[in-house]
Image (cartoon, rainbow, N blue to C red; front, side, top):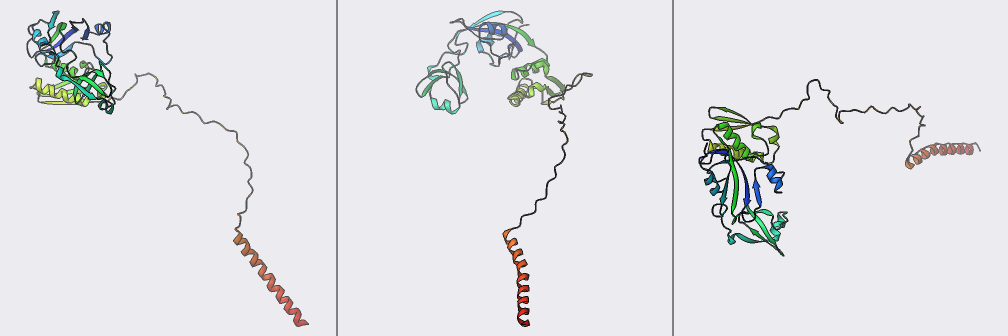
Length: 296
């Protein structure tokens, strides 16, 4: 089956720069490892594209039109059909403090993002950084070794292809689709719910579906969190928190009698008590003395 404009398809390729022979991109895991460009953050599998939407260089998309599925071919693109010629006007000198304010350590050859635009650091000087806003492959002749693996005809395959483009970390077959008339429900696997930016990805999926599959009028995402159960009959292994240690036994010891300690009296109370006790004694003495004088 020959590819046509607007087709939903899977594309396998390896991209090299003609001038240097360097492999710079591929959909094959083994090729990436052999070329020392393998990244753990990249999912290596056929690339999903809609032919004519500009997701690949225009010269490459034009060469895919009419290509039969499964046929291996090589396409060479000059800069004008690839990522364009290099534009010296896209080189800029940026104050180093702008990078430090964003916590970025600019390194020559490294890719950065400034003002929402991707750039390559070309040089780092005293207080200034030279950045290049040209595409990294601008001015290069590109050589693609490629094949169209599949052209999608079924709407379900097209929907899963769009999902895989926005959520490449999770295999698209784990998303369960339910469609009734023009209403679509997408059941999101639990492992996808913890991905960074999943809400933005869902919004992009809905936007793509409404654009490329206009027969779908409403899109709902179903999120289910399931409780984990052990296999039937399998003994439950207690966790560290579940294990309760028995209390340590202590030998009973006879209680010691604690003598009562009288409450200490304040000096004022002691003086008052002494004065009250001395007063009767003085009065008795006076009465005795008075009686003795009268007897005389």
